[in-house]
Amino acid sequence: MKTKKIGWLLIIGIFILTSCSNNTPIKIGFTGGLTGRNAALGVDGRDGAILAVEEINSTGGIQGHPIELLIEDDLGTNEGAIAADLALIEADVTAVIGHMTSDASVASWPQVKDSGMVFLSPTVSTPLLAGLDDNFFRLIVVNTYPAASLAQYAHEELGLRKIAVFYDEDNLAFTGTHRDGFITPFRGYGGEIIASYQFSSSQSPDFTPMLEEAQAAEADGIFVIASAVDTAFLAQQARLINFNAQILASNWSFTDDLIQNGGQAVENILTVVSHDENNRSPEYLNFQESFITRFGRTPTFAAGYGYEAVIILAEALEKTNGSKEGLAAALLKTKNFPGVHGTISFDAYGDVERTLYLITVQDGEMKTIQSMNIQDQ
Image (cartoon, rainbow, N blue to C red; front, top):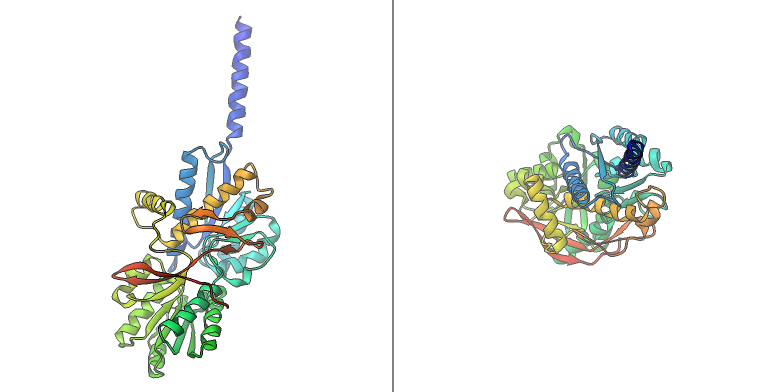
C-alpha cells in the first residue's frame, strides 16, 4: 500500500513538473527611447504594451503561456538602438516591439535584419523601410502619405502659399522623408517653400533667428517636423515675436508634451495622422478606461499603438502555438483586425493600411477635424 501511494505521488509530481514546464513564459521584447529629452513617445508606447500584456496574462496568456515583456531603453541614439536590439535577440525573445523613432530603426535594421527576428514598430513611419520583403512590420502609415495629405489641405483648404519648413536632423530618417513628402506636392499645387531649416534638437536650438527670417519673407505657414518638446518651443518663440503664421506639424509631436509645453502657442496647430482623436469605438473606450485606471493619465496615440502591437503579436502567436517560427507569415494574414485606433491590415510587405485624420489642438485638447483621403505622394 505504501509503495502504491509513493507511485501516485511520483505520478502527481511528474504531472506538476510537466505542467510547470508547459507554462513557460513567451518572451516579447520592447525597445524605445525611455530617457532623455524626447522620451514621451517611448514611455507611452511602453506603457501601452505593458497594459496589453497584463490584460492577456489575466485571461490565461497565449494557450496557457503568460507573456513576459523584456524592456530595453534605446537611449534615443543609434548606438543605443543597436545595443538594445542585440540584447533582446540574445535573450531569445519571440519578437521585438520597436523602435518608436525612425532613425533608431533605420540605424539598427542592417545589424539585425538577418537574425530572423520579427520587429513590429508601433510608430516608425519612414519610407526607407517600406516595400521590403523582410521581417519588419509597422502599425503607423508610411509618413509620405499623411505629409502629402497635409500639403493638399494647407494649399487647397487653408489657402497657404508660402511655407517655412523646420526639421530635426537628429531623426532624419523620419524628418527628411516627411519633409520631402510635404514639399513636393505643396510645390505641385503652386505653393512656395521659402526656406527649409535643419536643426539639431540635441543642441537646444534657438529658433528665433530662423523665425524672424521666415517672418520677413512673409511666410503664411510654418511646418515643424520635430518632437513635441521642440515643436512647442518653436511655437512659443514664434508667439513671442508676434509671428502669427499657421503652424503645421508631424504626428511625432502630438503627445501630451506638446500641450503641456506649448500652451496657447500650439492652439490650432494641425497635422495628419492615422488615428482618430474623437474615437468612440468600444475597442478604444475600453482601452482608454483601462489605461487611465492603470497609469493615471489619458493615453496618447503612441500608447494606443504600443497596446495594439502586443495584441496583434498575441493573435499571430496563437496561430504559431507561441513559436517565432512562421510568425511573420501569420502577421501578414492580418486583415481588418479591430485595433484601438481602427482596423489594421498589413500589405505584402508588412506596411499597415489605415485611415488618415486631420487633427488639431483646440481649447487645450487634441481633436479630430475630419477623416482624409490618402493623396498621391
